[in-house]
Length: 107
Image 1: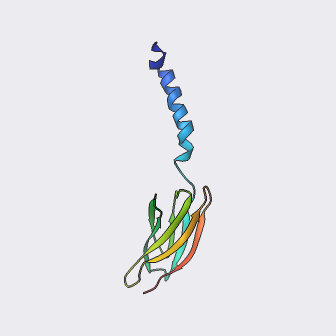
Image 2: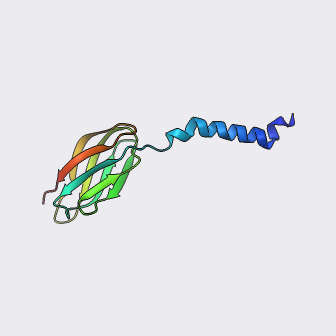
Image 3: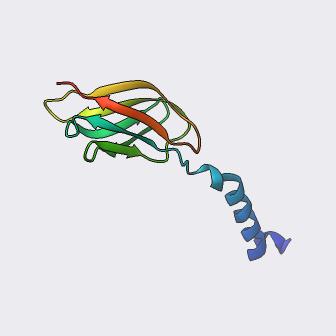
């Protein structure tokens, strides 16, 4: 049975795999927010037991992209003399941006 070795059959299998899994690879669910004072944060981290992502804080703003749906803790890494700040219970919904608001940094 040579049908299993033809390029057409392999292309069909590959297309089926792409259709099944291709739409679940990327999430258009950014987490964004800002830090005050604007120079107090270095990096924003979104943390869960299954996933950790980060993005730089630029001019007091951050946006972490392609976050999977779920519940997270947001951590803003503080630039000395500021301490790290945490916000728990950040809920990300598939396909929707999440605004974490303004995070106040403390010394």
